[in-house]
Image: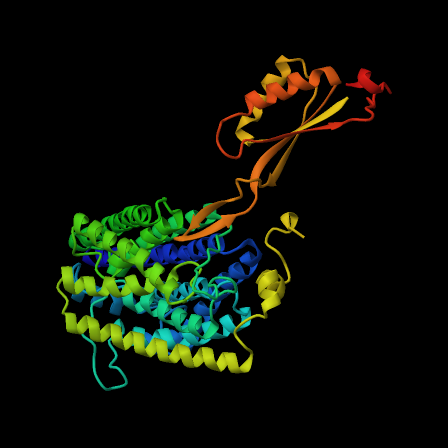
Length: 418
Length: 112
């Protein structure tokens, strides 16, 4: 009888992992819709191509070597029990040893599936920031390096428990990846935008900042809602376990707090935008919801719903000022990805030290390690790609839209204004 | 015969149409147009940055009328399209040389 309960627990934790992984996979759709809504119509097909291709590349590269670098699963998942059958006796023994409150016990393939969709999320962050002017294949080449090497290495130092090149170990707390996933993705994006430069016409010669309105705000809103929903898998699944009353309660807390933080972030950003601009800016409100989600991602389990709302609201406040500040620095980020995931990602990690029980030194050293590694490696990668095939389309191609130059097709051919 | 062309604010279209029906105007042609006058364009806001919309959406009305109807049409449109705010639009009157009703072949004032 006891063995049957353990089998059930194993099945439940595996099932929970898989469902949460599927929710996180759906965030790829959220990013695709958000980004295609916030770019101009002439760049829609290309941003969608980037989003579907990066997801597939991430899944393939993580299978080839990423998972091994991060968690030691062997190249091509050779160390993960997948189709070869599983040692049920050993799994039962592990279940009995860990009980309902110990470590998670689940299928190895489900762990890979859950981890791989996080890599894709990190990479999705990059695509929005470099939108409307980057060559498609330069971006896809970068995706190979980012998902096969850059992300897995820093993920290994943090979640994987590896020491940093044998030099030191991190004392860093990041529940679902405010820093490991979101700030890492934003850092790679920042390096890319620095190498790439701003969209033509975004910044005037005498310092003015021009608006380049997105083509489709319904799509952007749908994208933000999809991300909001997928985040329940992102944070909720990061509990890594469901069996047992205590853990089930933690999972419920995570869902509740994730939702609360998104709400807090949206309200804060909406109000701040209204005060600063005099109008309710929908795109800022959407960024605010996402900022709230990023803020709570580093510690969604231990806070109360009220504290989560406040932490999310702080994130929503920070994101508006970060977007304005980056524009002043002429760092052109069409969708606000660097602010939402980078600036607010840093805040989320530090929030664990401010409101939770992590040490400031551990959080800061962790952030610096991730930032320096990702930024330097990304910069080198972008520069190498620039030297080999170039990263930016020509001025004329940019004017006509990268849909035509990169993909040869328009997103809305029947409405072409020719 | 005259052709009266009026550029009005889009939200005034229904009021103008009713006013013209009341004075016995039989047909109106309406087009959605864009343009600017002394009002110029207006500014919109996106993510904190202002941008100028140079051409504002307006509605163009064309009415063909007999000479003795012109004054009442001008009065009806001016009154109905009036809001007193900048951007109310303009009315142009031009001579109309010939009109033909395609179905019957009638021409001149009979075709109005």
